[in-house]
View (tube, helix red, strand yellow):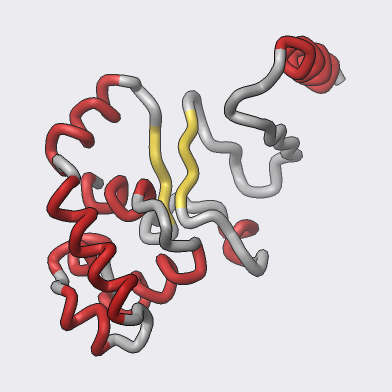
Length: 138
């Protein structure tokens, strides 16, 4: 799962590109193990992007970052995992990865998602809590 986490966290590369890399290399580990030349030969990344990914791999402490992630008790699903929601695969720019706590809903279960700013204002936090409480009671 550490390779899925690495690819999910890789900034500067969009969801569509991550999906193409995964399809071409067949696993997140293979994407990680590939070198700059392989990225370029794939036709998915141009020279500058391939260099960027290679640099990020060298700068990132894969084991350390993954251990810190595990300590937070957050779960991760990527398009490579069996539990990735089928409904999400149907949307055009589906997220490459989902982070969550708790459990994922069963297929067919009614769902509501709240998406907001990472640096929400005090008012935004209050409103989000009120909305979430109302939805939970509905």
